[in-house]
Amino acid sequence: MRVIFFGPQGSGKGTQAKIVSQKLGLAHLSIGDILRNYRGDLKKDIENCMNSGNLVSDELVIEVLKERLKEEDCKKGFILDGFPRNIVQAKELDKITKIDRAIEIKISDEESIKRILSRVSCPKCNAVYNLEKNAPKKENTCDLCGSELKKRSDDNVESIRKRLSIYHSETEPLLKKYKSIRINGEQPIEKVTRDILEYLSK
Ligand code: AMP
Picture 1 (tube, protein in one colour):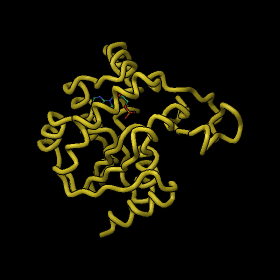
Picture 2 (cartoon, rainbow, N blue to C red; picture 1 turned 90 degrees about the vertical axis):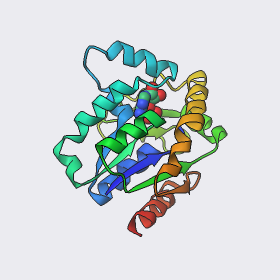
Picture 3 (cartoon, helix red, strand yellow; picture 1 turned 30 degrees about the vertical axis):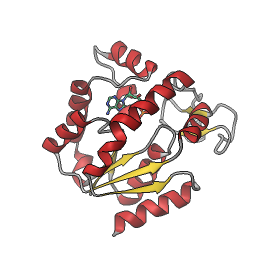
């Protein structure tokens, strides 16, 4: 099964993509994580784009995605987390593969900003924590791998507002291109997972 997860910043789509991909044996393709771990010549340009809340160039993300899709684990299906974000990317995706379903995890802008400002993540294993609702057991330390947790450099108010505005104008309208559903992302994590699994089992 090939699924796209849409959702504004902080909606929990990365967290859900991780849980659901493990449960269903699908590959989890987080474009944000792939870009953060990019080690090629364009590293500085990518970092500047991400830190200001802008999208990285379509050519580059499409190239990166095409490479990732060639890997063995994608053969059994995947969850795309963070792609496509605009119509150019969506049209390109149509040429590369067929998508079965899409899910939007919906939260308000107010909730998004609140969540992002209290988000920290692990630079090593990409685990994400919310300091209010899902704090690590030991302060500033990843529960999973023991690395020091960091705030993402693009998680500041100015960048979040920019990313939300791009999300509403360019990404959200793509949902109607696919067989899709909207799920309330302001429910407990386990309930959101149940809603997603129920939809994917139909
Ligand atoms: P995320 O981790 O999904 O919040 O993505 C963080 C940042 O990565 C975004 O603000 C963009 O700068 C960049 N990015 C992620 N996915 C894409 C994409 N599909 N197209 C362009 N830029 C992207």
